[in-house]
Structures are given as C-alpha cells and as structure tokens.
Image (tube, rainbow, N blue to C red; front, side, top):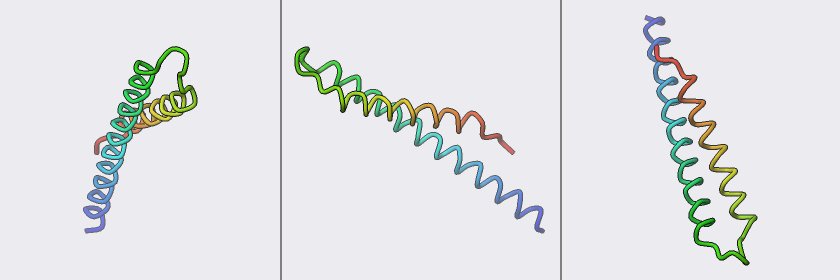
Length: 76
C-alpha cells in the first residue's frame, strides 16, 4: 500500500514541476516580448534602458529556468 502511495505522490510532484516549468516558460516569453515591444516603441533619443534591461533579463531568466525544469523532469 505504501508503494502505491509513494508512486502516486512522486507522480503528483513531477506533474507540479512540469506545470511550474511551463508557467515559468510562459512568463519568460511574456517578459521577452514586453522588452521587445519597449525596444521597438521607444524613440531613439529617450530610450528607457533600465526598464528594458530589467524586463529582458527577467524574461530570459524565467524562460531558461522554465525550459530547464521541464526538460530535466522525468516521467515515471
């Protein structure tokens, strides 16, 4: 009985990791798209570098960590 519970528990944890990885990946894509929109819509002389870099780096970190989490989570 405990083996069945442990297997079910591990399966639930693996699914949560995949869901969290997918959420991080989507947030990363949104951050990168928002940084690209800020870059494209900013005038040449007054570009807000701080927000552009912040959204770009956060988007990249979220995207890479989400992809890494989904890729390294094994199905059982």
